[in-house]
Image 1 (cartoon, rainbow, N blue to C red):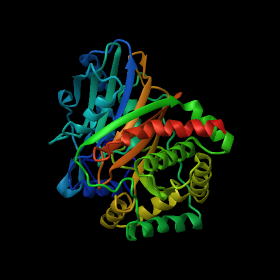
Image 2 (image 1 turned 180 degrees about the vertical axis):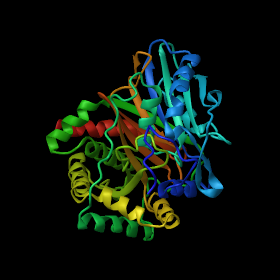
Image 3 (image 1 turned 45 degrees about the vertical axis):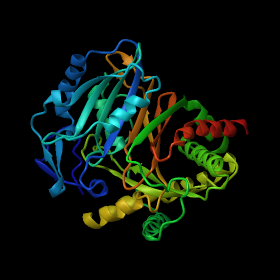
Image 4 (image 1 turned 45 degrees about the horizontal axis):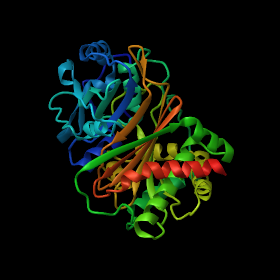
Length: 414
């Protein structure tokens, strides 16, 4: 197990990649995989010099920002001096009405880090009275929850306020261990049918968002005895159902998805590397009703929580040699066995930068391992943002956010 590498203490000169890091490295064949967080603001933007000053004040004290990737050796190497002019940038997108152009920029800009750590902060000027602060890194170096902790520590006026609670570890049940082995076995079986997303890739990626009050998802969850994540997945299941039915006139079978889960423990908030596992769920896209879809999703996620399968997968990966674990991890999130990764990130309170509070946050990564579509629900204070990243070979996938909102409305009306 790698050291915790919290915010204090000396940093080792080198660290081996963990299993999940090596899986991303293998999936991308050594290329960077951009992982981004964006924060939308209203009002007058800060200057680039002001953003650089904040980053200069804090970056050296955040371990995740101090390591670069030595890909041919699967190693993270400490960097003792950060050249901030290479890490903090500015862009102007005055016609970007919905933030989708800024999001595409965060994924499409080259990430040739060379001998520096692969992270950047962006100040993006949008239409008059709007701007975006963006943070991006290489997914080989950092997972989404680690990026959330890093952004808070790097940019927020109160770097320790309003953030995530680290994951407390526990022992899984026997059923949790069986479920973990079952997920691995499912990943090794011949691929199933996922008609909505099995198309040749175009190599071009688009991003779309929709935002809604977080209270809506919480209210539906309370009414049915579920969680915000349950409501998100059930509405997504019905959105895929409606989208596929509209496109083809046929029913979509249950869709296997990969659900990333953080195992970042107290003391590891700012550590480099991916501290996450994935579980396999079947979204009930064959259900004609979002209410019935929600019941099936709640049964599956309830089982994951009761059996503590998150901890079972964590222990399984820790006990597996890195090379074998990386192959298994890559297989579990490969397009041959899943339709889409479905992430959920709770940012907590809004990002407050130089007195201004963000209105919306979004977390998203680029596509890899043959995946044609991925979704993330990012919660911030009272706003939930659904982000859909899709290959342009799925030209109508930008309808999924509106269909997701329609499914949420159906759940509310019950």
